[in-house]
Length: 230
Image (cartoon, rainbow, N blue to C red; front, side):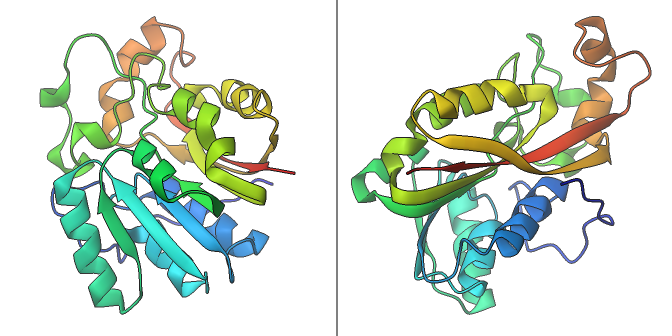
């Protein structure tokens, strides 16, 4: 399913944290459309501002636990949770710490997935893009995606589902293959084309030179992958 949305507005407070963007909103839209959230135990990985976790709570989940490695993100998401008046258990640490409280019925995640050049280009990127740790994911964008796809099945209970949003620039088929290799049934269930933001705009020449995008391309495709455990 391909969808088109207006530019995000009315975002949560996200000081020194990734501001909710098209990817976060596509994920939340898919959460609502699929109906997988109500009355289920949810895990939000790489929660950032808490936007997705708060949405899960507002959609009527049984509980939601959110992880982020950054203390700024944890502090910010806890403040946003309090302002929203919902119940979210926000924890600091790598997503791998979720194994201590698994299994979950639903996993939702908007992880870092932006391909990064070998030379630091942070000075060329607007501070409005947020901290680089929130989106940089190695030269192929797979630094978090590969281990996450390889481990999701172990975090899910039988009958559980994963909803994962990423850019096509980070290799959608690799995510599908990684999830399927662990026994999950995986497919793309939503997509959206958006214009390059500040990060990809700053990296456009590098993306062209390395063959990651065609010459003159200034749009990327976002996808949401659903993976179900039998």
